Amino acid sequence: MKKYFQFEELGTNYRREFMGGLTTFLAMAYILVVNPITLTLANIEGLPDSMRMDYGAVFVATALAAAIGSIIMGLLGKYPLALAPGMGLNAFFAYTVVLGSGIPWQHALGAVFISGVFFLLLTMSGWREKIINAIPIDLKHAVGAGIGLFITFVGFTNAGIIVNNDATLVGLGDLSNPNTLLAIFGIVVTVILMTRGVKGGVFFGMVLTVIVGMIFNLIDTPDGVIDSVPSLEPTFGAVFSSFGDSSFYTTAMLGIVLTFLFVDFFDNAGTLVAVANQAGLMKDNKLPRAGRALFADSIASIAGSVLGTSTTTSYIESSAGVATGAKTGFAALVTAGFFLLSLFFFPLLEVVTAPVTAPALIIVGVLMVSSLGKINWSRFEIAVPAFLTIITMPLSYSIATGIAAGFIFYPLTMIVSGKAKEVHPIMYFMFAVFVGYFIFLV
Image (tube, helix red, strand yellow):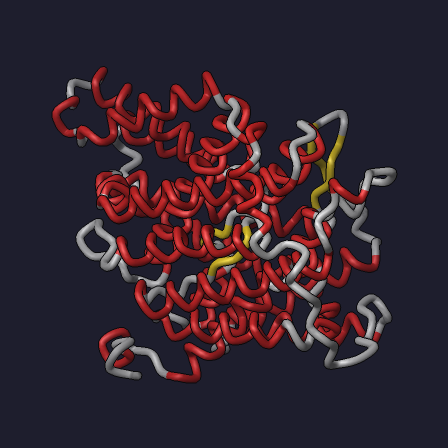
């Protein structure tokens, strides 16, 4: 096992990988609760049962899709990168496709399935890997820094430190709110642990936050430990019923498939680059075994749609595990194992609340923005697309949109500066793709 995952070459061990995998799981365990709530439209009243997916089945599908994707990523890609149904994509699935357009959830699963098949074909053809390797090093660093700002912003909003403000868009939240104070405690204690060089500081910060939350009754003590696994029958295989329905084959569904395809492609590419960069796994501006890593999320999306959940993708929360010391695919296997265990220990997940995960996201953001120092800011033609990539991610609340902004401006600034020949042909192709995306899909 050590030899397969190259523990000695990468300077890691079982303890670091296990702690990294566990930290990643805790940082993204919220999806086991949030995804079922989102896909079942639980917060929307007065809907017919036919529009709602089964809560228990979606929970099981979420855990299994995450486990399958993470296992494939760990074994084939060998990256410390975990997968699960993606946030944002699940909201698009539920609120835009099902609720907004009145499309049956079975058809929405069909769109996810088809986009996953397209992903697989692109991966097998080698084009996905070629696109990622064609991205210039400065933009790769910009993607990593932008995602760092993005997840920091997510952490601040989850903690209630930053909130919506009608006058200024965003503003400072109520710092006297008990849950916000708990998150601030988590930030402080995690900063102290990390500053002191404590291995696994992010993980131990989360544990201490949970303990303090229970002491002050901000986090409910679980009613039990083990519960029965819900039935997967209501959603398993429902995707295939959509293919026999003539109403599935419309231009509207084509747009939905392309949206799933586009957002997942670049969210996943950005996450893969950022996490690999943070773990020190990039070699000569290229990702080793990139094709295998991309294969993992393709299969995970297809499997997830069959099980009954929205698009499965790589999770930036994996960077929390990397911050704890994870460097190999063994950490992804550990995360997968905990997702499988969660099927039986669902009551325990109640302790992983937003104030618990928010500090981890914020601290990891601090680590990821170190990529800013590796960007050649002295070249204006590089600085502009890099900056737009970085700033657009948190402001648009979308990794894919940030990448799009940078990819559109990079060829433009390089051409105007007389350096058109330095631009890889694929980047010109991506320029056209992103312009078309903003015109026809956004």
